[in-house]
Image (tube, rainbow, N blue to C red):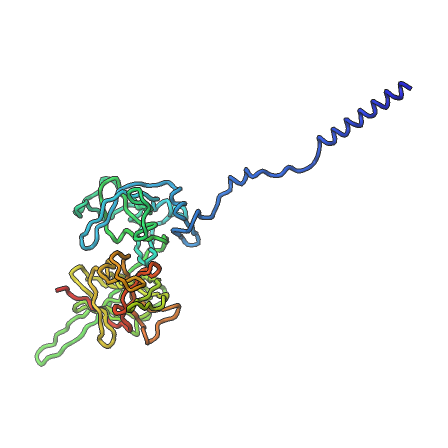
Length: 397
């Protein structure tokens, strides 16, 4: 009997051991931990997109926080306007342009970088300028100086320790150094939103026509030069007629067809005017900045003004500062009150409105003004000129 009890006890112990062993060798798969997620690379910008960098099919977007997380560059910089006015130098902080370009494959010989601001302003920097420098620099008085070391092109986000405000930022292109230097104002693209690596462009082809005047005693041949300005190389012949715009500077006349104007650097802008206290509809326009046309033609300096006229002779005249700097305008808010501090106004000739070419009511060219309507900034309706036909460069008395 005792032997049976002993065997029964041993049997129970063996069964218990087997059950414990079975529990210890469970085949349940463990749940993955979230630690692996920390190694993933996020492609989402932290916050709203501030700038887009493009190189063909390669596109990267950056929020302000993204840029601040990158290696920063600190230096001094400022601007010298075409009229000689110097602003700065100030202390700035930002990200080296070359770092952003390298993130989309880098820039190669034969390419340029086009900078675009939210106000439609564009400027282009060549491969040689990016790699070798060669920018004009000046001291705080505006006198030309040669820097001891090559300045750095920087996408700036703060000045003197404070983030850029809406008049220049949140981003601005700048040329910084460890010296107290300033550079040409047209390099500093305010409110920068796009950086595009593009193929280098060629500009300006010139044709010459001769006219003959006959008198009773002699024959005198005089030569008039007409410059047809095309700034984008194309393999398709560009129609030079019908002429819709003539730019007159003394004895030189430059003519444009619509196709030729469309070859110039375009501006894409929303614009509206105010008349009394009534605001016109806000429309989307495509056209060419007045500044772009005059820069291509040449001969427009601080000693000039410019007259914009329709086919009947009705005209408006604008100073050099208005065209080149966007200053000197009367600008109103949405109540009709005059603004004493406003963002630069951009005069441009529109040829398209809301996706459709302008009809004869306003076009084919319409002088409009981009004036930050999103910030309730408007120009007066009396400035806008329909059916523009001529631009005449005048000598300022």
